[in-house]
Length: 92
Image 1 (cartoon, rainbow, N blue to C red):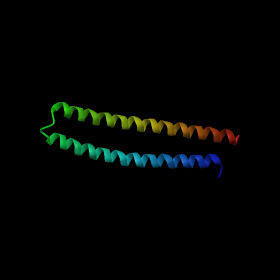
Image 2: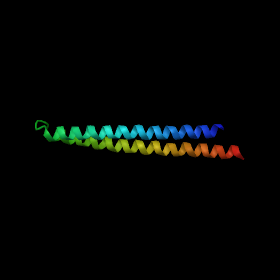
Image 3: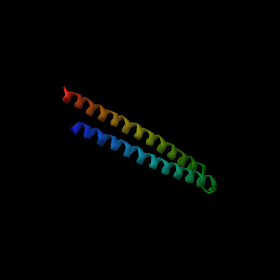
């Protein structure tokens, strides 16, 4: 097996590992968000400004997670293109 095929397999393994880990983290975050939302809705002692701050925080976290996932996916594509281009150059 040449080094580029091994690197591609390693890249695929890392992509799959990231996707699975990120998916599990998102499920955990969604459940935590649901619990926090339920708690905040039932807590009469939390002022409306505090409830809005918590809502804004969860929205920002969701947006940040999606931007992070997008950046990682783009970089996986770049790395794959790099290995593909190097493999084709070596084959010639």
